[in-house]
Image (cartoon, rainbow, N blue to C red; front, top):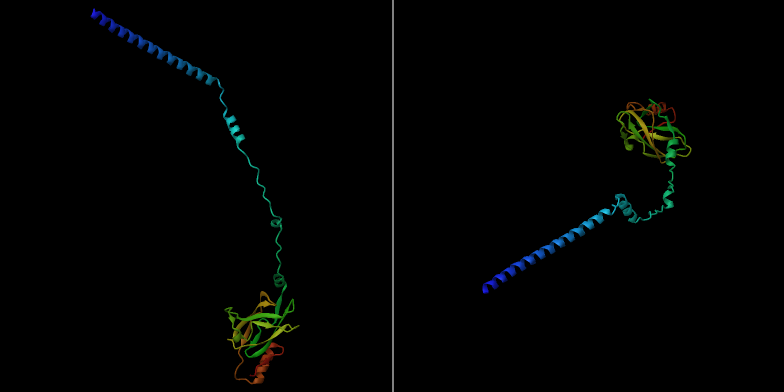
Length: 224
């Protein structure tokens, strides 16, 4: 009798376990089918929604970008007004100013120790004259202490000349350079002339005669 009970219990347990396993498996299978159905429905609904064009997204993005008003730059009226620059009259005077030497002339001869009148003509009255004696070969300036010509010379009113006592320079060819007239810088030159030495073995009267003949006007010999 006990054996039958045991057999019954074993069969009951096996049948019950099998039924429970089958029921659970069916339940899981039903749940899987339900999830699959729901996923398919969602995908189908998504597929029905029309895609948004790329251009619409771009336009919407552009429409959402705030734009600021252009900055207004105020231009000062003074910047467009040309600056008034004073015009110097010095350059005008320098272009209109003309001067030429009457003496010394080309190939004139002057002698050391004689006093000559440097005469000139100009387009204006000359009151201040800056000059120098230059060697015609080397174009080097002779010092005023040797040439007897001061750098700056005041010209007497209504005068067109100045006195020049020829200094103890080396005999040769020279010319006079004008660098400034009445405060106006310019360059002007005399013709080339010759400076000679008076012979030592002659009388004072003969020396004075040489000075007068070489100039053609009033020339004096320094007797000191």
